[in-house]
Image (tube, rainbow, N blue to C red; front, side, top):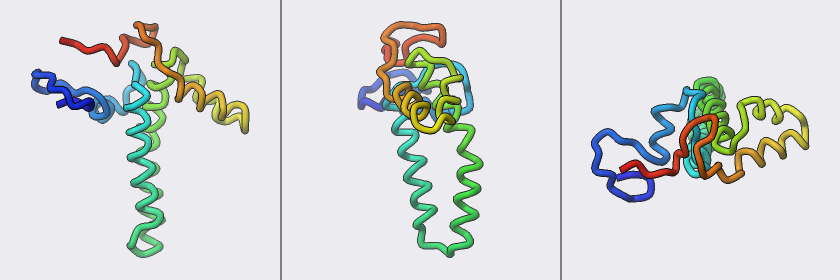
Length: 130
């Protein structure tokens, strides 16, 4: 069963959010808005749990630091593939370093609807393969 609740009938085929877990360290390809934002929300929720967790203060800081260090590459590559779906290169990630306008441009690129056709970064990830 895929992310949308449809049965694909093919063993081992991953669709939707779960596809990003197999390719989270890849800079190639494209990632849909839904997959990216679900991936990001899961990481934010885990981070909030670690910050406001019920364990001791020292352990919480160490766990949060370890979690951020381990997941930072996956978040960067997922953002890169999300920008690819919008038609932008990975260089747009550096726009986030510019205080206000750069952050707004980066957010626009992450929120923008993906191109409905194949682009230079790969095929459309929303096309059903039968």
